[in-house]
Length: 83
Image (cartoon, rainbow, N blue to C red):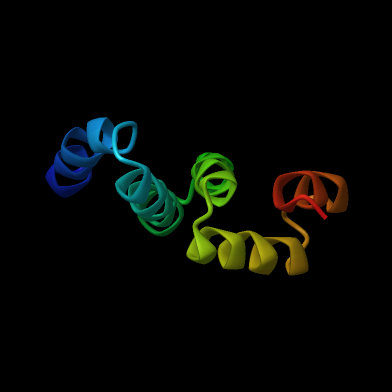
């Protein structure tokens, strides 16, 4: 794991559990980091699901794209977005 990713996790992970707005944004960004740098889509989906439940529109959009790509099952997608 490179220095930037470690620094990102160390800096933003505690913030992601405190303030509601920050929690949404940080969880979304952590999901993006997991997907783009590590290729760990399973962890990215967990971050995006948490952020979507908190009301983050970007995470909802990311989950929609993942659902269209067939990564997220229809049942899980509906359960997260409350459809």
